[in-house]
Each structure stands twice: as C-alpha cells, then as structure tokens.
Image (cartoon, rainbow, N blue to C red; front, side):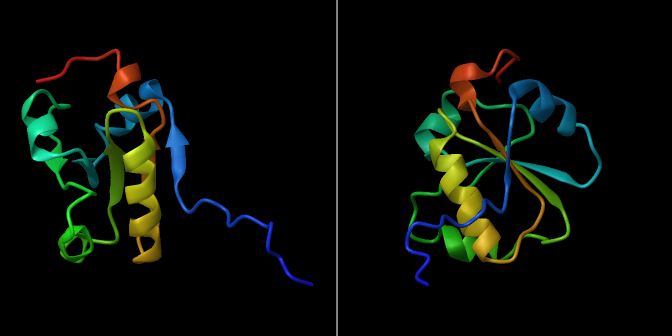
Length: 111
C-alpha cells in the first residue's frame, strides 16, 4: 500500500577505480571533480573539471552541461560524488558514473 521503506533505484553506477580509469579515455566522456576549489587545487585527476557539489549554484552549473555525454564524477571518498550523481540524475542526466572509492582508493597519478 505505502512504499515507505522502498528505496528508489540509483540512477547512476558506482564503479571501481579500474573501470573509472578505463572510461576516462572514451570519446564524449566528461570528468568532474565535485570537491571544493581548495581540494581541487591540492591534486586532481588529469582532465577533470571542478564543479563543487556543496556550492549553492551547483544545480545552475549543471544546467549548462550536455545531457547526451557520459559523466564520471569523483570526490575524496565517493560520498559527495554519489550525491552529485543523484542531483544530476534528477536533472535528467542518464550516463553517470561515480568513483565508488573516491580519491582515497585511486591508485593512479594525480596532477
């Protein structure tokens, strides 16, 4: 009757560092770091764009993105990027992948 305890399925994929790294080279893929500007400045994955999910204008910033592209999102632990994926899914994005371990589990180079 009431689906109070029924959780909504995730509209994005949580992926491993290895799968995330493989996806980075695909055409039409956009890499987004959702950490703060300070965190972003202290080290990022090469080619990443910074869109801080905690900023009040995050929803406004994503309105300018192409919904037909694939987005790879990451943060420090995978938590904020998961939240960002959920927000983007609500806004109509369909190709969203979250680095489930965040940078804490990233074995590749940072710049």
